[in-house]
Length: 494
Image 1 (cartoon, one colour):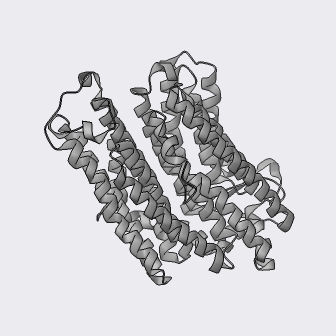
Image 2 (cartoon, rainbow, N blue to C red):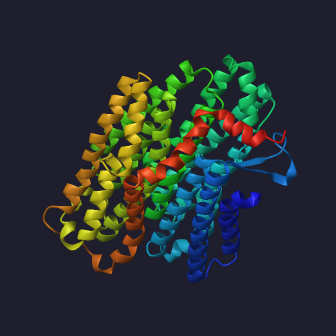
Image 3 (cartoon, rainbow, N blue to C red):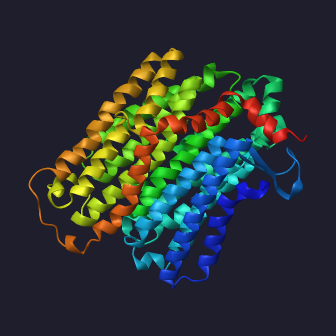
């Protein structure tokens, strides 16, 4: 059973490889992708329970013992993120079946979709810093294809920008890993932590920490490195946009969370203070963007940046409460962002536009869509007892414990401004005089609503049932607070 943690990577990998050979069999591709994606959810759920019962799971690939070979590690944080990724991927697949269009489906949409999940799950599971780079590249190559698929003018333009930014950041990633290896002599993440502990994080390690912050900050869209995100995430079709918004930036956030709690925790006065400042600035600029735009896609996209800032502010404080809040909020944001993007997609399918000025009165003919959006808006803003409240409360509490009063206050105020930005969509788009939209009767609204409604229900249960979920979140946080637990689990046979 030790190979069990490989399954969330192997199942989407085999799905992608298998579907490549049947590009024109659209119905067959849909069934296979959907069934195997659902199986991945089941496997991921079993993995979470296995980690809960038996502790951290490790696999030394090809029987090369750590730290000499490639090690895969599934602690509770990794397992929960893999499970959340699998749920979001399944929801986006369901939405794709009736929205992405056969022209895209014939050009390897589902294989690329599956390979992206390979990269995301692999990045969450790897225990090797170079292997993290490899899974990043798998994820990014699939995302390039998904972003450009369809060949519209805006897609081509934004894909070039997205590709250039990520090629540069990937080159810097390799350089930083090489720099780190030259200092500590290992690529195993647990062994790196052990080596840094031995020398006490000298100045050269602090430089490497900042380089990693730049690399992962580009991929996670932290200030000021988010400049590429609003345009790039705006370009692809809705299910791809939902997948990107829910998952891709969160891989960058996870990478900062993992490295800054496992590697660079010995001298937090410089590195973590910089992280806190950038996180706060991310919240501020994300709020400005969310309030300023009247395009419903742009409003939700800028809310991604706000969430990244809030999560990383919790990481920067390094207090147990804030770290617990960051983990809780990270999972919440993956679910609710996917739901919001899909709900926005339904609105666009009905109206044919994403400009809020051209939309009104949807609640009269689509009350289910309206009230589902309303609940998701409250969850995003952190209104109790929904899932966003618990995570933000703990982040704010941890900020006060760390005497980061200004940052905690900004996180608190951001909730009101998030609510304002999202309710702007609800008030202007759903209320007002109903309009007739060309072709709306052809939109399969009930079918499209299945995926976002399911995500919103899961998000509501996640918040209302937080007491039941909390033991899992606490176990995930325990590894971040006490890196020795992670190190002992990986290097136990040495």
